[in-house]
Figure 1: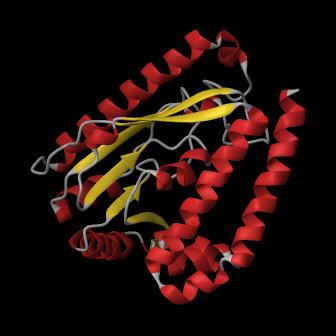
Figure 2 (figure 1 turned 30 degrees about the vertical axis):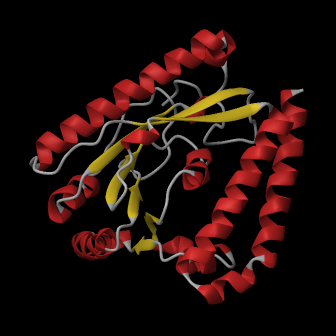
Length: 252
């Protein structure tokens, strides 16, 4: 039944995405806020489908840790689920993402319309400087800037590989940083179509105030996120021991 429900969900998920992408084209003429509103509509409807079809729910914790103004949000990245689910809880958000995504028809148009921060990673040093300028400008507008410190999705239990970009932004912008832990990869694996029933948790942790050097910040960020993500994974295993034996769980 999990396989059948996952197939039905994925058909509905992409049909819903396509319909909203086509119907929402006029929002591109009305600026960032309009496009963000469409993104939240898609995210909420997708989460509703996920709950109804697959029995998979998303619980948000620690929302009181989100500042009212501009901040960095550094999130663990295990699946596609958190990339859209978190938009339902954020205000004027912007993601730091690779520039190639903006070239995708329709999807890329909306990324540009929502004024997301696209970085050409092949340029390395220049990319860091460009990213810091763009993020500083977004923070100055009171926006919540979301970055995935590992740069890509990692399976639950895999060794962390945090990149220097997040510490560079933290020091250069002088912004408060909200770490985010999660266990979404147990329910929505980074590869494959299976969507497992249960409660995936996304937890906003207490902010890290500005003022640390890069090394101290990175050590603290990684320790907080990894320890909390492990705690959330253990919580999920206790609720459903079968999760521990599922493919792609706790694998490199």
